[in-house]
Length: 313
Image (cartoon, rainbow, N blue to C red; front, side, top):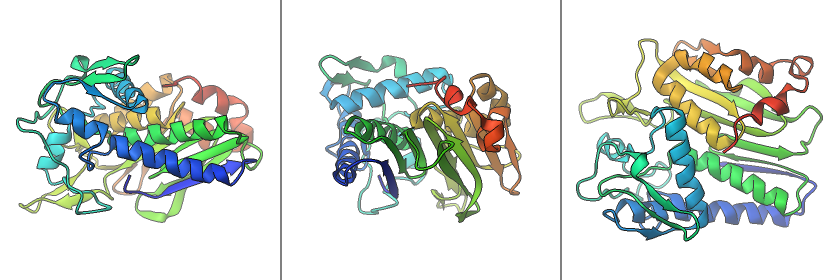
């Protein structure tokens, strides 16, 4: 998935680390837009035909639809064509891996037209629609692998894929799992530390996957579906972190905040989700739920588990 992966297992055998590695490799081979044989690439090039897919891809597609609906389109995984057009065609991890778009690729698709048969593991999308798992793929993979590890006997597990973190079960210390939030201006330092009993944390930012176009214009990979251009605000947002019931949902809502800005903070408060955004001048803004996770253990109390369980995939 072109990023670092960290796995922590509590009271489990060392063989579970191998299980985690194999599970992540399996999901990458099914979901990567840089692999021509992946489920996602085959769907994008199927010209509307039905494709047999892995059961995990069924979950991914359903999660995409749910996130798109919940955010009223602010999270939109059909923006692959404009992203490639802006210059993000090759993998950051392996520049030789380049995304191939089908003839007639659309700027944006309608996920209501995605056809999904969970019983037979079949799916189809209209010709020209191009799906990009992007962040939700990393978040959902973390959720799935944590579930595999618990089912295989771990008493607790944490999986971080490119900074998207899913935790479940017993933590190494009292008070829940401690999840550090990197300073977007200095990834070697933490801007906050969260305590979570169960759930996920995701961060989306503009400072890592960024480049300059042929005209010298600065660009990043987080697009506004309304313009098919990098999300932009008068006060520049460089990172958004969200705490939710799963890492997949946290990813969905980071995109909504990145696109719609600080106006989304009270919306996430009503959902019981913690959110913090960081501006280019290093200042931050957070909602009340964020302070629940980032406060002292006395302030957090029993709310940590209750809040993150409110929104599940």
